Length: 357
Image (tube, rainbow, N blue to C red):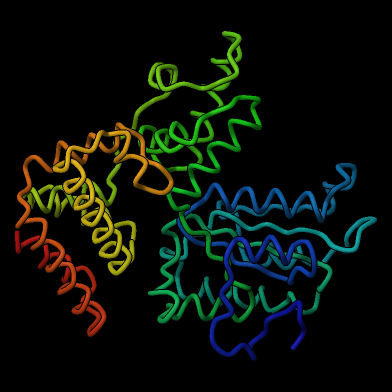
């Protein structure tokens, strides 16, 4: 099988991550990629990197970068885009975005796959099909990919774009500030996602807004006071909110958050793992607080160090939660974890967990 083309001979699922794509892009990119996952910002950034590599000369970008949108897309247009040779370059870039596979009819998927099979005939292309978060049912990865994902993987290499961890997001926030000529402490970089939300699109806008404000006022260092003055706070469900609602016995709130998780197709095993981690964090904060440790010492106990604001939220919640309830929560999580791994109960195991409180 060709290194650049993955045809119908594909056995299993050749799934790669965003970091793997960036490495391939610099060495030997394949003929086609399927971008999917939760972080749309990173998909856009990866497309920008591909464009800079394959179409570095803006003079010929009109010929060597072709964009197709789902609004007026049909399979023949994809074939028409693949056929022309690149102009004064070895390859050209074709980008197809906006498809919602969850609403596509079977015959539309068939037509698309027929068009994708033409990639092997026009190997001077690099095709990127970029799917927005929640517009493709991928099944339960990596063990049980959906039939549709496996079919698309016969023609395109799936690239999964996961949401960044809190630590990676904080590091990215700091780099974004530095790009704008602003210094920001690790503590502030950890606080901003807590305050503004975890969407990288929103964070990029808020960081730019704060950076321009600071530079206008002759400052080069970001501070919490300016952040709270300029940036827009956001309310979003997270593992802490979910765990806190369960342990406080607010079952209606917990079920509403679970419904949001279900809508976003969050992996139940991952939700449970993050919930268990949150409970462990609560146990650490309870123990250190009981021993009289100052907030600064509690913050330093976590890697990377937490902001005092976050520790304060946990301490406030723990005043309403007994030590026995905290211990029971961990035991219930272990039971739910076993249930999820022994049989595909999905969200049912989490619903049962909520009912136990």
